[in-house]
Every structure is written in C-alpha cells, then in structure tokens.
Length: 197
Image (cartoon, rainbow, N blue to C red; front, side):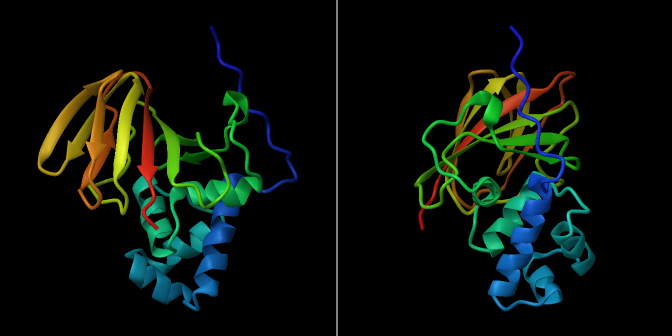
C-alpha cells in the first residue's frame, strides 16, 4: 500500500527551510545578538549562520537542535512558526517536514504545531548513509525513541547499539548520542521529547 505524497507547497510561499532561517534571524535579533556573537555562542562560523538565515544551507539535525537550544527553542518550534496553526490531529499527508541534505534525512512533525505543549514528537527518515550528526552530541531534553521501520545504529554515550524496527530506547538529557543508517534502505525513527520549561 503506497502512502499519499505530502501536499505540494505553494510555489510563491517560502519553504520551511527558508522560514526556519527567517525565524533564527528574528530570534537572534530579538535577543540582541550580532550574527558573529550568536555564531560564537552556538559554536558555528558566522558564514554558516548567515547562510542558514538566508535559506542557503541545509544544516544537520544535530546542528539545528544546537541552534534551537541557543534560542531557547526546540526543532519542533520551527515547524510551529512555519505552519502558523495548532491542531490535535496531524494527518500523514499534511505533516510539516524539513529536509536536511547534510544528514540525508527528512524530519516531520507528528504533534501539534502550537507552542506550549509538554510533549513533542518528530519522525526522522534517514536515507542510506544518513546520520544525525558528524559526532555524538547532547540534547537539552530527555527523549524516547522507537525505530519505526528499517534498522539504525545509535551511539549512546560510549556504547554503540544496533536497533531494528520495534526497538525502543530512552535517551537521558545531556547524553551524547548519534543516529546512523548503515543499511541499504531508508529507516525511520520516532523521537518523543518532554519539554521541561
């Protein structure tokens, strides 16, 4: 059974990637930070942040998480900004998605777009050779993950785990981790985070 393709975006409307860049710039300026100061704080080059803000670069999943954390946001908050609506039902064909060329991944929001919700869920589809980051990195929030389809390798602290469809794992806040797809077909993992603020 084939899945319905995501709805096509209006060609005149900015892409989610462009809107994410615009929101990063808006939040950085709201915090009173120059591009260089924000780049230093987040651990990136000013040229990378400039390209991100102008929709010219597709960051890795971990880079986007790191940037969101510096803005006191989460990755899903970027989807909330881009969709502009809050609903308890997210239809499969209507999921807001972000494409990370660097990670060879697609990130789709599974929970309500409005801010202020305690639980946030994303479905990450990693293509063969895809990875969430170059090196294991921490997240601010505790996370629960379940491999929805395919098989993935998870580096969790000093351990490397092979996870198959149906396997689940709990990732403590601040623990270095990294997802990699070493298989020949795409794999999906559902990530559920509980915000503490």
